[in-house]
Image 1 (cartoon, one colour):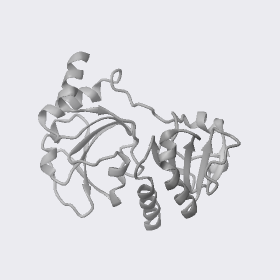
Image 2 (tube, rainbow, N blue to C red):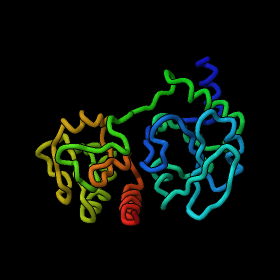
Image 3 (tube, one colour):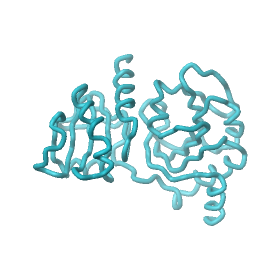
Length: 243
């Protein structure tokens, strides 16, 4: 069975990922499938999927597909979170965590492979799952915090790719830089905190990792290098202003 599933996934073009849904679409728990598209024909087999299917459309786009709900992506936040640069992209979620993705339409064949992934928790568990999730309310000194918590490591190549973005963001909004390299002059523009305890408590798998918080509630997380970090944070800030 496992070999059959793996073979189906190769044919389907599925790949393992590690991102977590932002808060607000009610897919943070359970199993769901996101279809990023501008053409509802790309979700023609939605009714064959044994889980909730959500079409993630650009703002202003209108369409329907049998067996699928429709969600309009505010400012492209969801596309940036899941690194979607091609349409259609199909993302399979378990407990709000991306486990596999395919850059192709949701055809009957792909729907069958998706169903196998949804049922097989041994071969396809969520990867790099954090202990904190969007929707969690924080305690302690972050109970009322609004801003970004960025986990950073001096000398980490992917962290260095974000250095300019983080320096710019630290001048625009609250950023708490949690670094495990005490004594180093990491990004003087940011508020800095050396804290292995927070790394362990939140289950941070490595640096960089980003957590956006509003009034002590986790709203968005991203594990790994986020090429659209500035865009994402500005969208989150704008969405907060609308509420």
